[in-house]
Length: 523
Image (cartoon, rainbow, N blue to C red; front, side, top):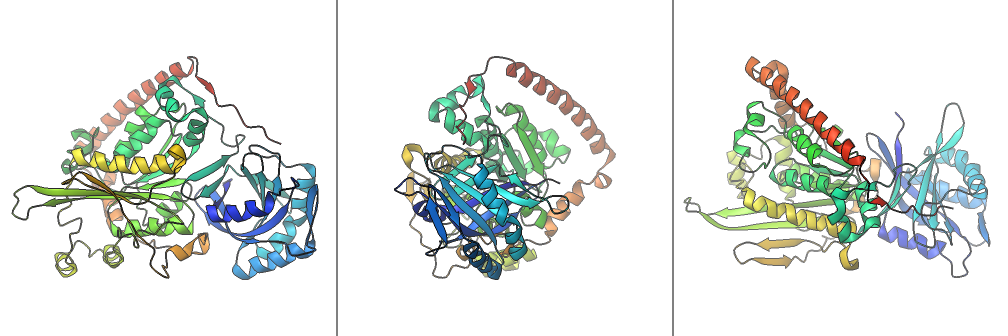
């Protein structure tokens, strides 16, 4: 399979690179950095780690910039010692948008590609910084058939800080046309922002009451690529919270992600949306590897193991995670609701992890992984409420949790007023108070130490018995004939509705569009 390619770095790493590459005299400059690979199912990402600046005599600036072989060997040796790859970074001071390589650029990078691969066992990554607007472009120097070396152009380069900044390769991921169905959305943050936002792929983990609503809003916004991951089955007890899901879905034992995908497909405003659904747990190796294909993940699960996996991924693989949850406090005698609290926050380098900010009990992760979290003996000994001991939720309040997550999503991606994500927020229903929570990283936090470790970092995944059991219970061999017949009839109805939806979308596509976001000038 031909893999997609990308590059990601923290905002602090980018500041280091900009300080060196953007010169006051307007000339090009060059340096190298090490990277760790992060490998998903279809995408591989180079995670920049350490900037290695040239020492005196190792590079020459003369309008263009050149470096010596000794500099590359020194940097490659340092990368080899750490099990990392090498990225060659240079600037085009007057450039805007995604930069194409000039002949000198190509000659310089290709001359080092084989050497770097021999020394590090990883492909050379080339990066170009456009000085006029700060956009990045990138490519991986891969070995094709035989010994030929050529480039795989990246689809994007991502900068992770208080906002997620993305540079796009329009030739790989085309800027979408704006449709009349998105007119109100475009009027809020403009055509250029919409074209950027629509291309940022999002994985929603958990297709319950909160995740379903979050995913529906993303589809309506025009996001082109949305993934859904949940191993659970629609049950009768879910119907008071899964808006749009029907009694038929519960009777036919439909996976939550399949009903969610149907709803998203029918309500998406993107011209050609890609809605994927996986019956995996994020705790399974396959589930985590799928997550590494996305630019951002929204966590809508309340289990500690799943949260721990995503918590580590946010730092190790530089994929921001927006997380939150709700706790409803009821009187022990069943006399009604005492109050409710919901929280939301963005987990990323530069912010405390879920454990440090109090949203993840690491002591419960092992119990969840071993399947004892819901055991009454564990609950009594742990002296805390678990998802099995309560877990109250209602649709009227779950929409508020979804709204909190989506507000964090907009702040991280759009940065209204130039302000990025605000940090952890907490809403108290009893006093109707929204609070900014102060939290700090614990000294020596092992999770935050994983920044940009990628494939070399520890994975917290493993065999997930609960997920396997749910999938087994839905297997055709386990279902009564009446349900199998109902599924067949329901699938026929869905195919008819899907055909109608596709026809309607194509008809609207033939109507005049609002226009296309002007493409950036590439040089």
